[in-house]
Image (cartoon, rainbow, N blue to C red; front, side, top):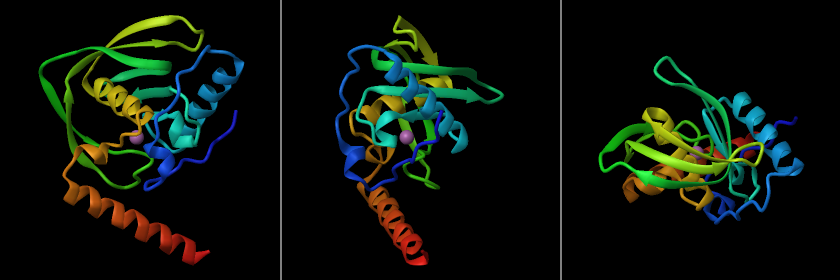
Length: 173
Ligand code: NI
């Protein structure tokens, strides 16, 4: 296994559409395992392949909180096949938008269909933090970040800070 580099915004790779996985083979399983290790090291509760520069529809999730314990979950080609009418608001963050958080509203419950690490089709009903997390990660596969779901004013403020911090890091080298 290997810890991969996590891309941070703004970066054009985070805005691209990822391609479906044809088959969950050894290469995809290796990617899933490396992504899980990378996510644990960060640490985070979800990671999507484009965040490590791989434009494939693969996500991993693992939540170990008092209210929600689930995973690790490995998903190829995840899609939302059912969503509740009622929404839930969660203060989201993202490993590609480090140190910034914002309230995002999404369906409170969703059913996600995906291929697991063995290539078997699964339907999983998600609620609470897992529902938020799985929707956030699937958005990454469509080039959408949580900051795309907040006001342009707040998004631009966060992006300006991220650019400034990146310049400061580069100048410190
Ligand atoms: Ni994210």
